[in-house]
Amino acid sequence: MDCAEHRNSLILAVGNRLSKIYTRTGDDGSTGLGDGSRTPKDSPRVSAYGTVDELNSAIGMVLAQDVPAAVRETLTQIQHDLFDLGGELCIPGMAMIHDADVARLESTLDAFNADLPMLKEFILPGGGMAAACCHLARTVCRRAERETVTLARTESVRPEAIRYLNRLSDLLFVLSRVLARASGHGEVLWQHERRKKPKA
Image (cartoon, rainbow, N blue to C red; front, side, top):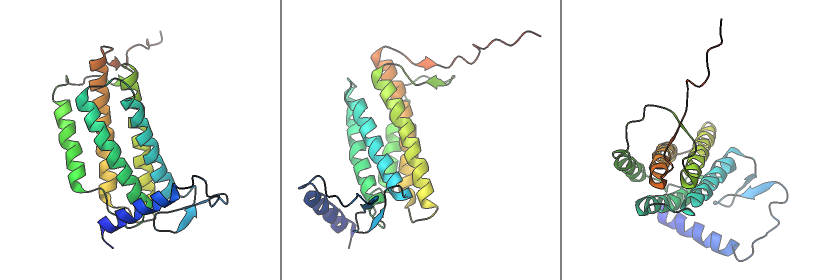
């Protein structure tokens, strides 16, 4: 079965599943994967794609704010990518994230970063609601990456999935800077010299 057939099967499975929201099949602490097999709800695979879902929700919080059109377009595309990535992690052997997706993140990151001043200090999460939500999404993305790496230690995970999450966390950091400046709040810099040296 090729990727398109896998995707269609997933859509059909989801469509059938959504006809009834509760199934009671998970009451024993297991959940169904996209290939029909069952696994514990706290398994590394479920943790990985569950955190990708959490990341998608966190990005939704960014999009619930007033953000520039270019950022909105970028994040909306990423939400679609993350839904694909969740499907890939949910169905062992599925391939839905590709090198072209990673390359698109890199070019998008370079384009947004080109207009930002050089960073000389660490930035604290903040800079207005949209930027703060984007920082939160960045940290969830890092966790999704860590959990996907953990999964890859014991099961097959395509390297494109891990690379995508790695690049995405970098892009979310840059977008946080963009949003902080666009909101007028500006970036919140870490004041590393605020602690005075104790007197001898």
